[in-house]
Image (cartoon, rainbow, N blue to C red):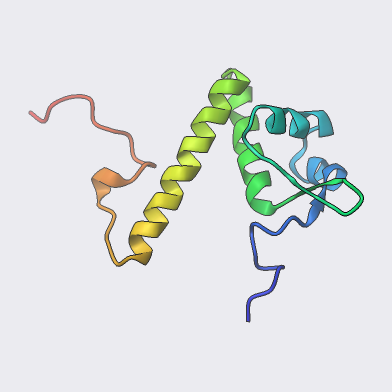
Length: 114
């Protein structure tokens, strides 16, 4: 039995709670919306509500910013990583396989094999 509690895309967290959970400011979360990375749901009263998945993306962007990347670059990288992970899940759901060469978590070899 699956519930909204199990759903990573369920918008369960208010902006203040979400910011506290991941150690950022509400302004940072708003900036991710402006950058186009995440678009929170809105409650009936118009308040932003974030999902666990959105917060995971926000944490990853924060890590990249701490490493010195600009916000637009960090958002683009996180978006592409998220899309690639979704594509891999879809391939597996369809009965395909992901080889070591397809794994985005492994660096691509840049030197020819000797």
